[in-house]
Amino acid sequence: MNNHAPKNSATLIGVPINVGANNLGVDFGPNAYRYQNIIPKLASAGIQTTDAGNIFCEERWKVDVGQNPKLRYVKEVVRIANDTAKLVQETIAQGNTPIVVGGDHTTCLGAVSGASVAVKGNIGLIYFDAHGDMNTDQTTPSGNIHGMQLASLMGFGAHELTSVHADTIKVAKENMLHIGGCDFDQTELDLVARQKLNTFSMQDLMNHGMAPLFPMIDALAKQVEHVWISLDLDSIDATYAPGAGMPNKKGLLYREVLAMAQYIGKHCNVLGLDVVEYNPLQDPDKKTADLATELIAALLGREYSWYSNYLSRNA
Ligand SMILES: [Mn+2]
Image (cartoon, rainbow, N blue to C red; front, side, top):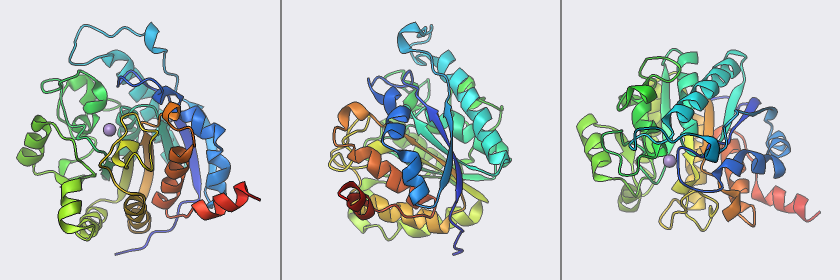
């Protein structure tokens, strides 16, 4: 499998959206990363990053939840997704790698839509998540849209969501790889089976170890020109990522998620990524943000080591 050159020029885009979910705190994510020096840390890993600021997200209390209880806050989610998509597309057109930080996971809806249009749909999506995020307005138990964007990006579900930025399928279903699932709804399992979607769940990891995942990544890297990564921090065990919107007690361990990120960074042509559901209110030691930064660097083919960070903290 081809090795890809590491990325060296990136644009940070914050999307402090929280109307896609129901967790106080994820809207502070983008600014918390900045407070915790994400830009100098990425620079130390060899990634020169320009800060494009935040996509404007209206305060939750001012936003109308709308008429449809199965698509809560849909108007604002779609407005933010369109704005995000536009900026991501422009960033890629300028030759930079978008690093999109959420916000809840609906951040990914706009980010991937913009990326897909930028490369005319020749894109794969590697989606790390404890949950399926493959509900539709017909199947959702909560009406929260952060459980729907993966289905929407593949063309399933409400037209408002599938038509963000362009009325096209953003990621062909055979070009999606879901990693780390441990909490799918039955309707999501049904969709996976019916559509023959690629998943590598926590159960697969426990049954077979990590080995079967790498050929799946290789196959995806071969069948598309570009790969986008969407990383929900709730795919990682709460021991390492307590600061997730919905902390996970049965998630990926540090060594596992880092090994996966390093492999992807070396073997995939990564077009950009989004890291979502960071809740700084649940991250007093800032270790979740530090881990997210390390994983971003690894996914872009670089290294940001905890050890060098430790040395500089204690210098
Ligand atoms: Mn998610």
